[in-house]
Amino acid sequence: QVQLVESGGGLVQPGGSLRLSCTTSASIFSFYGMGWYRQAPGKQRDLVAAIISGRTNYADSVKGRFTISKDNAKNTVYLQMNSLKPEDTAVYYCNLKERRRIGTIDYWGQGTQVTVSS
Image (cartoon, rainbow, N blue to C red; front, side, top):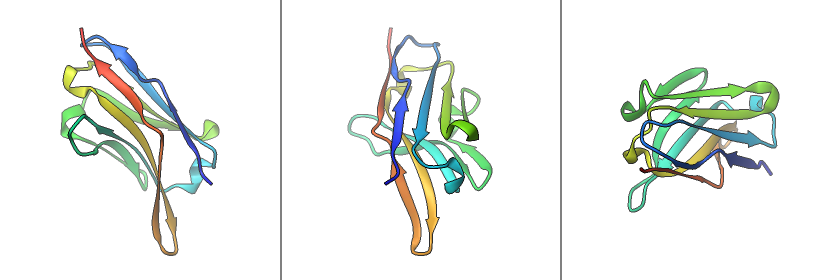
């Protein structure tokens, strides 16, 4: 059973920065995709940033402010968030994608709250 452990959320003022981490119990090489999603109250879960088969993509709302990266040796995916805005407030979820014969298996972290407020 693959486990994902997230950390790094919290309360930050507008313009501030946070770095989210997602560490997996399996080798990160097992996954062809890794990313971060977020869900604000009353809204659907949306993609924030992802690395899929080596290609990186970002939601338009975070381009130039957020950066996704990974450390293969630590089996960890990061989301560096700069110039945070109140509209970035949400629960952030880590996602890993594993390719199986039956299709893609998605694994999710437990979620970490990010609150941007003065």
